[in-house]
Image (cartoon, rainbow, N blue to C red; front, side, top):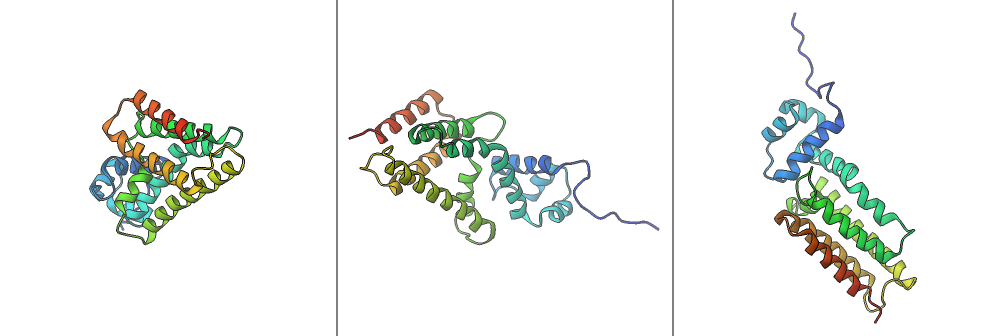
Amino acid sequence: MTIKKKAGRPRLVSEDILAEALFQIFACKGYANTSINDLTLATGMKPASLYLAYGNKPGMYAAAMEYYRKTWLSGLVEILSDERIPFEQRMRKFLHAAFELFSCDGKPAGCMMTFSALAFQNDKEGLAGQLSNERQAFTEWMEKEAEKAQQAGELPADITPQEFACFVVTLEKGLALGALDKPVPEVISAMIDRVMTRMFAKI
């Protein structure tokens, strides 16, 4: 009697390795342009095994996003959370580090979190809604941090916390998109410093 083995994740392949493979292909080709065939080639798994492991294509994307958060975005979170340094310095350091991340070797250029806004712009259910909520939560967190900085006299009074948060979030997204065109790093660095100097200037 022949016993059919149940399809599933290969035992010798760790979840992190699979998630990294999913991340690389999704970040390189985008959600819409990534086919199941692309994912099977990247992971070495059969379609049935991928669906058994992750449920569906959004589930595979979710695994890739989680890998991206843990592996690549954790450094930015640490910078933003470090209240030992002044608010202005934190913002400068964050933007510089963000551009370095978006343009560094070893990963596709840009930011998967930013690009997810384009991939799911017409879909607000499930994973799309979750990612949208995460982006909104980040903006709201930035507003609260800016408000605390303003109360402490670190952020000038001529800009509202909402305006500041909107500016920083928009600039970060612009850095992610701009990284695709491989701009001159020195120019980007100088631009960030000049903008931050003007933003925090005491008038």
